[in-house]
Length: 322
Image 1 (cartoon, rainbow, N blue to C red):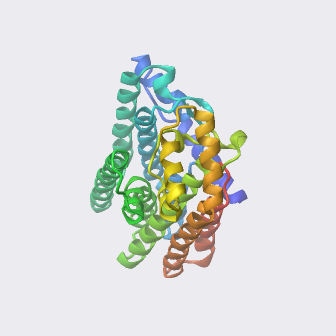
Image 2: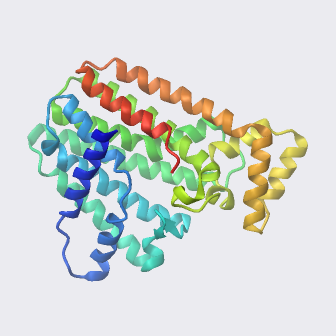
């Protein structure tokens, strides 16, 4: 864990050194504000760990890692707008602190800055990085659209939901890790296995996020507890509750979806989910994807020390409480 903290501190230092213009201030000040909100920097750490696994040091992998982090922050700024989220990491979101138009434009600039970071690589590596980055960016947008479409649909299956979170969340973790493989010049088998590892860790990570949205410690979570419930979002918890509920419990789920009192809605939904064993059922699905990820990691041809570092980070993601 100390080694992972060291990677995070290294990235924080480098993020602070990103040169952003001073003018126009309403474009760049929101980015300085948002990037200083911190976070665990999980995705860029994955790029650094992967590159080192395949023989390149973290300094060489830094620009690719920063590209991943800037793109991720771009998606967060825009997600907060679409979700009308008031808080991010216990601080006001950009669209609340400034306004929606500024948040959209500032987020767009981060997307451009991510591309700029990748241009520091050369020739065949640059092409492969760009192709993967473009594919990933498109898939993340597809996942976000599916997420919004699901809000209006009453017939979302658990398999459809898993595919949505694969696109919206998991492909970026896979991309972050495969970036390290590309930079390290490893073989196609290793690249495919590290990408599979990232995707399934990502799915498990998002399921954990769904669980934390309702079951986390409010003092540690950094976001509004029960936000998905309040917004009537189709999460794995919601879909599993519908699958497990009897006729009377189905009626209660429908009633709660129309409840206008936010406090009552969250408290009574939590109570019903506990009765149905929803948390345990979702944790079982989460563990299935985690085990698939670990199996992919085991097939990678690389020094055990580096694989153990990757495993340590994956384990950390599965026991987080915020």
